[in-house]
Structures are given as C-alpha cells and as structure tokens.
Amino acid sequence: MTSTALDTRNGDSIATAFLEALARQDWAVVQSLLDHSVAFRVLTPRALREADDDASAIAWLARWFGDADELTTLRSEVSAMHDRVSLSYRFRVHKDHWYVIEQRGYADVVNGKITNLNLVCSGFRPA
Image (tube, rainbow, N blue to C red; front, top):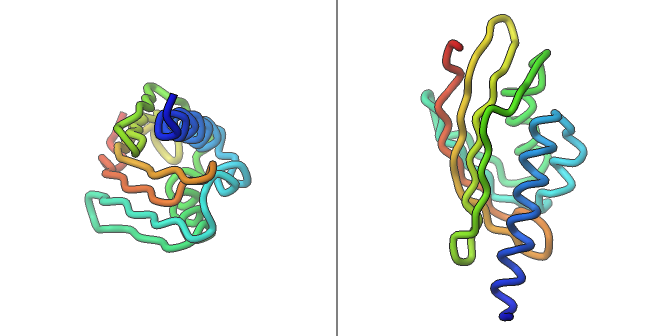
C-alpha cells in the first residue's frame, strides 16, 4: 500500500471525527483536529468567511452552531478525493426556530490535522 493511500485513509478518519465533534458542538475536539495555521474558507449566501488560524475558524463555527439548543445530523458523508477529503453534512438546528443547514467542501489533512478547509454553505433554511 502506498503512503498516499495511508494518508487518504487517515484524512477520512480525521474528517469524520471533525464532523462528529462539530455535531456535538465540542469545540475543544474540533479545534484539536485543526492545524494551528489552518486555511479556513466558507462561502455563505451573504459573504466569503475566512480564517487563517484554528481559533478564528472555531469562532466562525461557534458563531453558526454554538447557540443551537438542539443540533441533529440529518446526513453526513466523507470520502477520499485523491489527496483531499470530500465532506458534506446537513444539520437540523434549533435556535429561535427550526432550520436546516448544509455545508459541502474539501479538506487537506497533513500529519493528522486539517490544514485547509474550503466549504460552501446553504445558509440557515427554515425547516
């Protein structure tokens, strides 16, 4: 087996752990999976959101999901895409009302850390 295949499999498990921790709103675990200098970019319906470190990336994620009193994973998928990892997830979220939100994108994983995360976001849609 080549080292690329091993790296890709490791990337899949890191991305899966990221999605599981995000769904639990476990910010410490999410941050532990991000490289300190992660390149984080999310295209939302309103604007491009960017961060160039793990703390700033967590700030965006917590802003979107941190105040949810209920967050349920409706669907999630992680798969290898050569040297990147494809990921997508759809959450049902309760804040002031019920919403559905979906994000899709790609991650680079190096030495067990997400170094690059690019997502496209549906925005919070009424459920």
